[in-house]
Image (cartoon, rainbow, N blue to C red):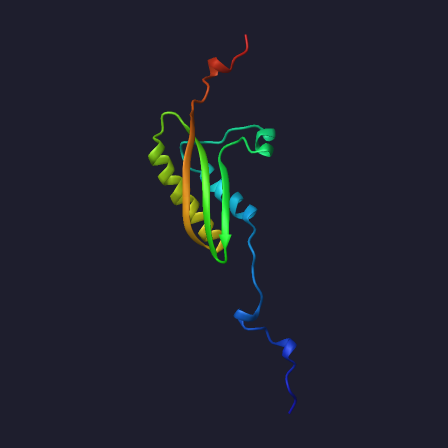
Length: 126
């Protein structure tokens, strides 16, 4: 009889290591989820995004396998702030939980501003 080599057998799941999901990854997921909600306006140029002046703005706090997310959005007029915030909260909660496996303890949504999309006539340079 030969003893089997332990390196050939996979470790039990609880002994395989730990997965760390960076806050930045969670924030990317939450940003994309918020942008998918009807009435949320993605605003700001590339430079605005680099210096944190664009919307949606997202931050997150991770403690173990629990995450809290804060989302600031610009809402397209005349969508209702309460309804858009409710849908953003639901979408971010679902997507972050689904894609990371973390437990989402809360999603705080702030409607930071309302904006109108310029009509074609307003965009014209004369």
